[in-house]
Length: 613
Image 1 (cartoon, helix red, strand yellow):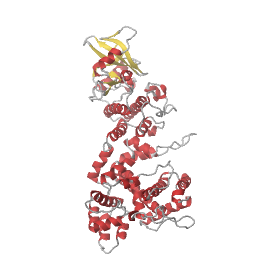
Image 2 (cartoon, helix red, strand yellow; image 1 turned 90 degrees about the horizontal axis):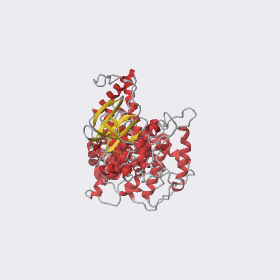
Image 3 (tube, helix red, strand yellow; image 1 turned 45 degrees about the vertical axis):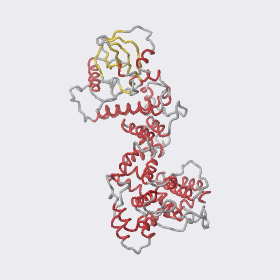
Image 4 (cartoon, helix red, strand yellow; image 1 turned 180 degrees about the vertical axis):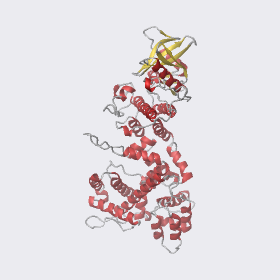
């Protein structure tokens, strides 16, 4: 429906138009505790306008001057998402802002005349709002009262923000000369106030998006200001999207919206750009699997590589490969600890195999010793020389975090070796366990700041007073809330970019922690299960408080007991063995794990391919 049609169907005011200076107020379009928006006629220009006013008139000439100063400063901002202001003035002690009605109808009006927006449309609208508010916040200006009646939808379905700073309130001692720009821009109290107002804007945007998706306001209250007064830190209410909504809500979007209104303040978005980045990442990934954060990651692969080589790789490779008489498994054992080189060798050989230009054979190549045998020591040197030196573009803190992540992945690889059934190749299970962490490593190297945000969101908040400990988000929800995509998506995108086949992609996919472990159908399934078990064990040991580790490891032993013939003692021993090996820097290749009673575990499959046995 066109805007003209929407106007024609608008309800008629039961009272005649009232004079307001040069304007005639026709109809109230919307109101909150802080602001109101009126449809009015401009008697001088002969046009329709929308007037935004505070609900309470400023008390006294000084407060009116402060209001005008704040609103005129906001009106000077020029951005496509901010409605252009026609006038900022005062009539009989009531200040107002006027905008052209041709800019659009309020979101309330639009929703009354159109079908409910889809999830993608709602997210796109909020992106437009957040983009405009981010621009305003960068200039030190906050909206102060984001509501449906302060958002305008034009003929093309695009949203613009109006009534910027209309809800401004000031006390005499806070008044300063903003018009002359003589305010102290670095004054700490002013900066704190600006940040606080910007954070309230972002929380209000989360409530508006919640209302669009749920088709009902949060807590049954349309006024975002009233809802925020009932949320932390002022109240104890919490807001989460209901499970019954007009349109199905994808899990990434649900995680984003729920984070924006989280009951724990520390979990919420602190600025408009982080909220915008998550929404934009989800929408672009939804429309194209190689868009948004994934596209940026693939672009960075071409400029800085997948991972930097560990310090000392060059001399180590030269020393090892200089002895031509060394066995390929001995060379591989020296190369395996460097994940960057291991991934590069796997990428090189499997891409060549897929393209049919270098080798032939059945199934993927999943051991470095075979890679060395196929490409020779010269090929290993070339692969090592193609890697970027440590730590690439990372700063000291980023390099430290990446090194810790690499050590954690290596620990998972050694744990997988200790857990594997007899007859399965230790190098294969090590590399599969490492590949299951490819997305995490890519995140740590290419998105260091976002990785730290995700870690912080996953941390539980300590108990306060009589309340219990507040849990953090799980990894999937945290990555959705920051990036709009799951971390594992990065790993699969890189693997596909390298040309790795579906069999490897299947083994890279971790078992869901809450899903039952079923009997494997083939060797690929078994390798996936072993690697998943190892990664679960290492995650527990690395992230849980010490007092919770024993019980969690016992749960892992019970979960995988039937398929891998594990018990709690075997899990604990495997983890300790892996820690010892990592500490020594070696890569063991024992024949296989033994059960607690000493009986060797039989392989699940009788005839596994050479590369996986």
